[in-house]
Image 1 (tube, helix red, strand yellow):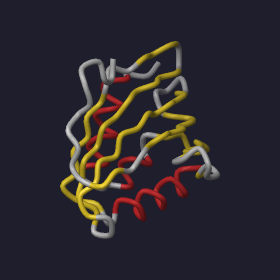
Image 2 (cartoon, rainbow, N blue to C red):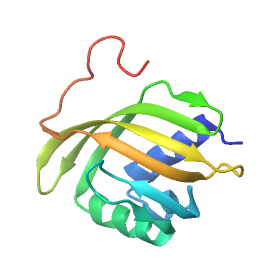
Image 3 (cartoon, one colour):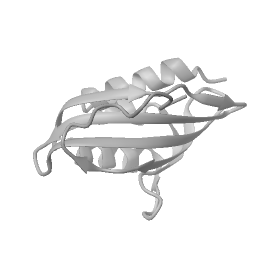
Image 4 (cartoon, rainbow, N blue to C red):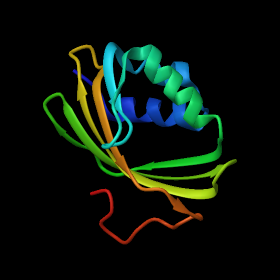
Amino acid sequence: MFDSTAWLAAYRQAWITRNAEQVAQLFTEDATYQSHPLRPPYRGRAEIRAYWQRVTSTQDNIEVRWGTPIVAGNRMAVEWWTTMHDSEEGDVTLPGCLLLRFSEDGLCEELREYWNLETGDRILPQTGWGT
């Protein structure tokens, strides 16, 4: 069984520190990671690691907030709200949602995410976000 709180804390830490190896270790060897609904998924730890190395290389001052996860069996859905400085885009706000499926050993087998990129540092949305 997976621990949603521990998994999200480790994912957040990997993102803030831009640690592609740490994030890759949160996934099964044959996991799929679909970073956007209109893009094909990355398959396996090596592709996930390479994706994270590439996309986080331009990011700093990263702050990640999680909503309250919804857990049903081996699945979890959670909203997230990230602000950061991107060397190509400037200050950005990146809100989104993760849909995840976990293996029996607590590693993620499938991740699908939906997100929106906005310029500037946006405050958290109104009351009720993430619940």
